[in-house]
Length: 212
Picture (tube, one colour):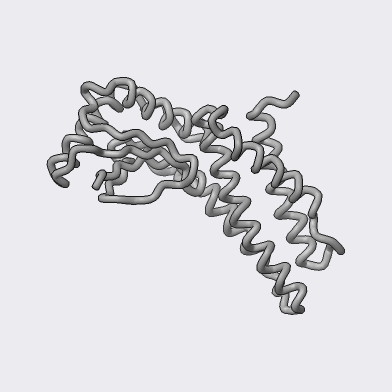
């Protein structure tokens, strides 16, 4: 029986293959759309949506990222299929799909690694992607368990995304969360700060959101 990581790896390969086969279909190289592989992807996505609680932080981030990518493709497939049925098909699907792939895989390999504090984004309010890890802090110095969960979520997400984690340390992260919380409480006159770890277009983001 395949492990969760193996199934997610197969899902990622299936999504790439689906894009290729739809590209062939819209380009005239296939007579029928690849409904079989699409059906298989739908089953896996639905199954993991129902068992999200069984996944580790990193696995939840990965399935969330794959689901977002698949949703983008589905929107393209739907529009192109409609155009094809109406005889209005334009053969630019490949370029659009490549643009999504490039966006999802966007990295910054030549940029020096930054401390968590430099990567955090602050906002008065904001929406996080489905499946993002959230934790609310008001006194981080007395909320060690929450900060530990946040650190583990951030670390596992970066590892899953293939980002460098060598410069991350538990003590520096603790100090960052404490300082960030106190700074926002003073600047925004609030008590609670919500930290959100999410993957956007293949990059791990750590956000600090002021609770209204």
